Image 1 (cartoon, rainbow, N blue to C red):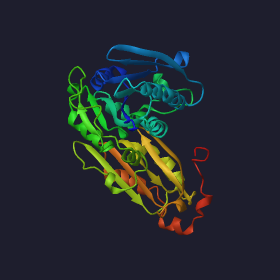
Image 2 (cartoon, rainbow, N blue to C red):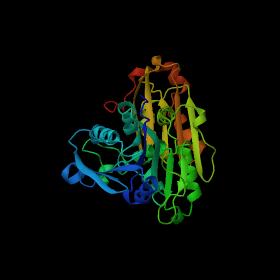
Image 3 (cartoon, rainbow, N blue to C red):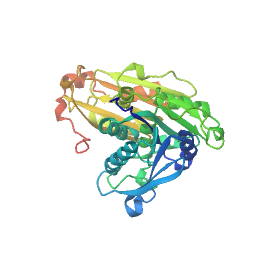
Image 4 (tube, one colour):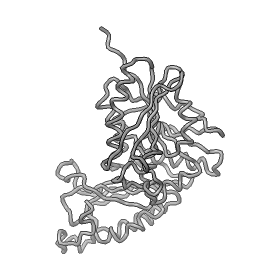
Length: 357
């Protein structure tokens, strides 16, 4: 018996459901089944509504209940049997999944790849608004403040979500480009945030001018590598159109208090930064560095002894109008001085991040 071919799946993400509609139409044809998940009822009723449709019209509809735990986790768990049942019906050659606005592609795709061998993730497409993109990447507004959080524990901000959606996408659709005076600069910004992505503009009514589904562009290993730790010089894209990416490295550890005091200055003018840092008072720990907009966060990655690297600091930062010399000077000032390296008991330093990670 010949093994049945995997069904390709195209995933659509993005904050604006309005801008996604014409893109969703462009992703579908007579052989496609579409699953759309909406979160409009989540704040009031605690449910995510879903509908299934194809070229003939509605196929099915229902709701996923979201409790007080991780809403994204519950969504993923609920989607797996639904997608599995649709593929088993064998009525369609292509599945399009439109995720709710606050859903990141990475955890969803990871589950699809591991739990649904009958599906092949083909394309991850992200829709961004040219008018609001810089604002969405630059602020500190929480998703909860826009009633967009996926459950009570969801403390992500808009900038973090927007950056992560872009960073995992094979295709970025730049909607409303005709309303922006700096569309070329925005294309360049998207390419800095994710050199893997193909940027496709949309026309005046929102229809994409290039392919957005069944492109065959998705590569799980490449997507995971880019969305993971940014720790090498090949992450730096050529500067231009006011967009700059800076690589900062040091073989000295950071003074925790000086780093904490400098956080606002470090993220000033930086749209997105990621990397791995070495804190003097935690000499064995690899610490994840991440910022989006005005928010920075640190977290544990493991021990330096678990890697092939000596302890070091590496941060990649992207900004618009960013002054590389200024940023590097601020970060350098957070390092232990030569006298501190020789004379301090590092582990006795005050830890302003205690209880944070």
